[in-house]
Length: 443
Ligand code: 4AD
Image (cartoon, rainbow, N blue to C red):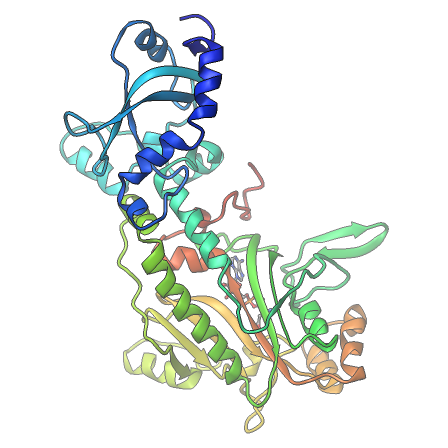
């Protein structure tokens, strides 16, 4: 037909109104997820069959990735649907309307981007030529790449992780991202000009979340962007990532913070396995992985114990260095050497060479860093100066502890790392919607 409709516009409009949400519900109700009471918009594939005639000619002229409205009859497929393993229904198309046309020369196809490495290897062994689109190219055309079933699932899982229920009296806060001095120290900071004043993008909400605790909030959390001028171009570093920050008043001991991590993560992993089974399956189809092994109560080891176990296993590690690779699936390492931690970390009262701090690991890689913080201003100044930090740049922060400050501690979770490691994805760029790494500032 001519124009973008097959079928007259008035009928199509009326049909769209009549069937708004209806055809979808019909399709979904035949799918297993819907049986569990959850139809996920945008997460299903359905084959549409056009019988012939004008509608078929119109459909044949449509390019891949064009957006269409379809009205038709939901039916059981007469034969298995090509290219899918779980298609239960198809639609016998009666009316077809093109809402948005895609160009003919798309830089990548969703089908190619969705291919697993195993598919490509299998095809190669069989002498077939299958296009394999590399990660960089997929990221260059991320809007198309995001349409693969695995990517749709990854960001649905991420949304669940990000919305972990902090039901224990935590208040959500938003700290400034434009700050005067660096928050974590070191060179990894993006500098900028703030109306003539030197400033930088916050390396973490660290100083301001502590100041919020000094401001009378007993328990705070923040989900927000964290900026690191990373030199390291690795599979687990981004220049901008999402941090889930928690800070809380301590009654007695920094292990109270570890207990929050334990409760939160065990519940979150249980939730993902139970309620995101369909998403995890979609990810597994493109990126096969084994489910994460974790205990009901998270294993906690002292750093020294961990080092000893590694040394006994024949791995050479420097006991006073920063340990970041360890081969179990989910555990915490506590009591790090003070020298390996930021200036605001509380030293252990029995041996100040060690600190009241911990890191949490998933599949051998760090996802969380936490600690009790120093709340005595004199010690804070001494520790900052010992690390070469110009305390004038953090004067307001130090002063916050001069008007009465409770003992407190907290942690930060790297959102992209949690999803990457829970799903066994080998690269953090896969769990960042539009990743920023040392080489990438677009799209
Ligand atoms: O270890 P980090 O730098 O710790 C802090 O930001 C402190 N304020 C918290 C503390 O008490 N020490 O970062 C914490 C977490 C890491 O465990 C990791 O998950 C993530 O943030 N992270 C990164 N994620 C992606 N790209 C990077 N460049 C990251 N750097 C840290």
